[in-house]
Image (tube, rainbow, N blue to C red; front, side):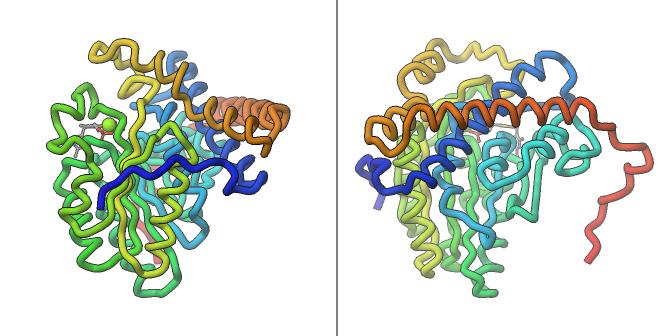
Length: 331
Ligand SMILES: Cc1ncc(C[n+]2csc(CCOP(=O)(O)OP(=O)(O)O)c2C)c(N)n1
Ligand SMILES: [Mg+2]
């Protein structure tokens, strides 16, 4: 049941939904471009993996989710957090390791979580998210709360046993689960053409008895349509789906990666495939939105990201006394 869907258009969404989608993608892009600059300045501790270029995946999937739903993310998690509604002021402070951060500065970039938003966490364990969402989806199924759970994971993570076991369990338990394989062509510096046994990750869906679809990850509308079908099926008790989203990440695997394993693919993608440019062309040529409306969002987002950085820099670090707080969950 693997297939590629026809390219949908902006006609199916209201102007407000289009504005929301654009704001999410623009916020992710600006946030990531700014973290890239700030990291180079040397004030951000730890490892940072940026999501720029992949915005349409997080935005297209999370547009269908609400307060009942949860997502599990990856080490490249900022975009997933933003698309699920996590506050960027708290996120930026977290990345700076400050006490006002989403996890009080103790997690950093790779561990941002906000359970109040259904964001179960970025995750330093490659393949860590799929088992988590099986648990969350099983809980929703038993509670009958209509919730779905989504795991975003990379092409590298698609080879992990945890991911393959989760795909199996999701079908065996008929879970309201969605697996979004974000195939950016590399796991660190290793090309997926070397490491993934099938041409397409979506082909693996058949082995686990679920539908598998491939979408152009530079096209918000393609992701949105595929995710809409998967979420509707999951909510109706129709079980899990595997969606493979193909695109290119714009920055290195981590900040500091020299990227000796690739040449001009980023410049080409930024110029010819970019999801924000395509979205703008689509909605303005179709007459749903004007360039002025989008420019307005650009300015608001730029100001909001700037404020988040200023606040993060000014915020205090956690105290030594905070070391032993939040270690155990209390019920
Ligand atoms: C279990 C585990 N093995 C290895 C690593 C080291 N590691 C961190 S990111 C990464 C590559 C992940 O590639 P992919 O899943 O394609 O995600 P991408 O970075 O491309 O978004 C690896 C091997 C890890 N963090 N966890
Ligand atoms: Mg990858």
